[in-house]
Image (cartoon, rainbow, N blue to C red; front, side, top):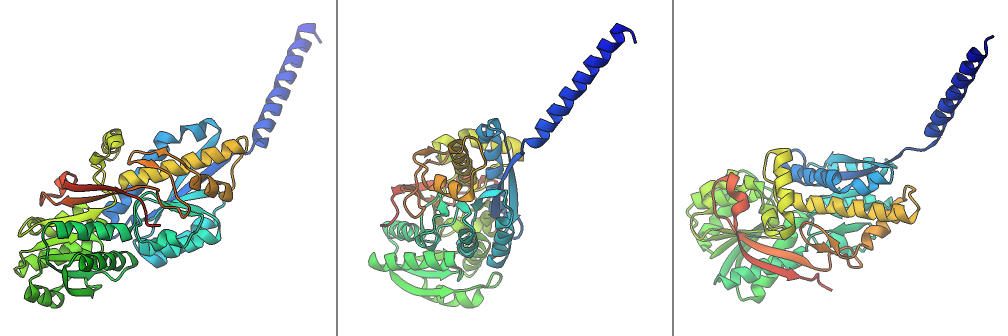
Length: 400
């Protein structure tokens, strides 16, 4: 065999061996794939808010997930539709905890869904950061895995009652939706209203969503200065519209569950008639946050719509999960952290600069300082919901 042919064969053999070794090394290196789940109502009558919570989380993963990508991690969002239903939320939670790749959850919007679902997360040691649940019981159980980026109803209810008193309201009829969230905040509002000297003409719970005639009869007869609703916008907006149709001209007030452009779509001009409509919230319009201008621009560019309330909180909840996973992975020299390590890293977060505020968590997972707002509905056009007027802003620590 000619010498040149022998040399060529040797080179090809060496190249082949190098390729084989390279492929073997690549195959031997484990893929560092992790997931962060989300749970919010992606279908049903609360999907306007729930879908945008998921979108906020999705946008955060795209924009602030680079440090983990640079460390060799592939991070995916695993979205789940809890349908604002506790049973669905729990069933989803069981699916979530059974996937070992999921290291954290951005969830939920409804306290009545979060409380039972977080029992499942807790039993499996899976951290969750809520962008919107406000019932005190979410955190007062003291679970290490449960955190939230918003305030609490035992503060929000007081904020609402104090505002009503400042507007000279002397009497109120309180209605709630019988959920952990709606009834809870209504009870906190009632307690504070009585302390402020308001006369409570009624305190009624209902699951009715279409015809409030029977419930409105004592409201119209008593003619309170304020009708307060504790619950979510699909129910509250119908109630307010029908009250106006029955001739009530006093003030309406609700909570952050009312904060959706769909409220205007349902109730329209009824929200502006009479003494107007106000709502308290732990989530102001994204435009009130100094750090959210780019978020609003990027959100609209990606989804061709302005963000609904709590979308920015969905972004921050995801960003916190990503930062905690990054810190836990660095502590393990680039290895995939355990769920317990991520849980500890989230709770240890200090002065995290989000787009809706700077976050540190206390010993039970509440933010050490939270913002509360009161807004006045300014337009019957759903397209202008984000232009509702902020009439009060408070920065308050959680109860001890």
